[in-house]
Image (tube, rainbow, N blue to C red; front, top):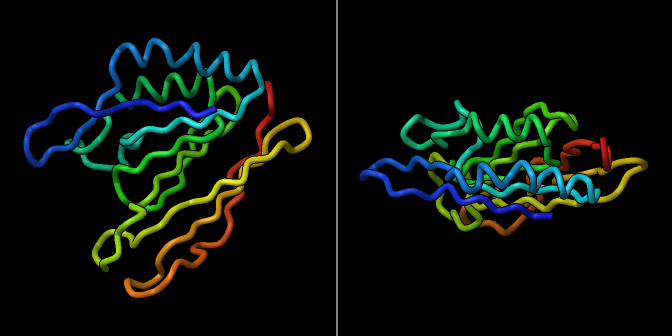
Length: 164
């Protein structure tokens, strides 16, 4: 189950902070809970990093602590974000175990700069015993003029129970 959250808000020039509105924050716990009871693999999609410290204050998710509290109490199997344009894998603890939080670079960056070149991640999700197995394979450009190659090997994110 894919759950898309919008963090878009108007900001002053040179600022790019985001915020989840109260409607999303109120609906998310019930949605995550219901999808978990249906034994679905829950992927939360969000533009801004859902954790403090992954970006500057003027570019971060202003109410990240509220989202982290919901993730801690209801769990999710995977969270994906892209705002920073850098590959990153972090985790937060939840009632159903660690939640992998994956940041991805732009899929179209073809010039060498301080940011990562184009990259995308493929996720292979399968049932494993009494739970889920999620394996991430990164692909993208290793050089500005090169073709798409496998990057960084294969990362097994977690094995998580279907219903805890």
